[in-house]
Length: 92
Ligand code: SF4
Ligand code: SF4
Image 1: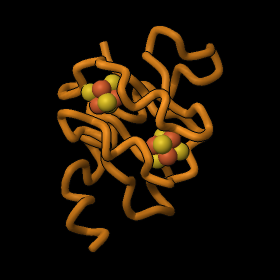
Image 2 (image 1 turned 60 degrees about the horizontal axis):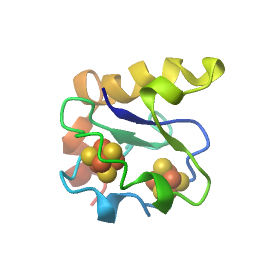
Image 3 (image 1 turned 30 degrees about the vertical axis):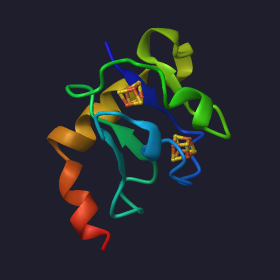
């Protein structure tokens, strides 16, 4: 299982600092990947990021409301089809 960032994300980055496995990455370019994304293959489901988010945009995938369940795939796609971790260098 994984935690998932969904469409309430306002890109403030508050969640990044607390992730023990550094698997939360800002989407880039922003017009294609407008949120932050969690790598589902690396996330250890610790939940540390959830209370840091000011807009409650992170949930365990099993708790996503039905209209947000598509975002599980979007988070994964950012790492398989999008820039993934390379976005950290692209945004510099
Ligand atoms: S649940 Fe834990 S490991 Fe997963 S993204 Fe959040 S802080 Fe990182
Ligand atoms: S803390 Fe919430 S709003 Fe901020 S980047 Fe992370 S998911 Fe997005």
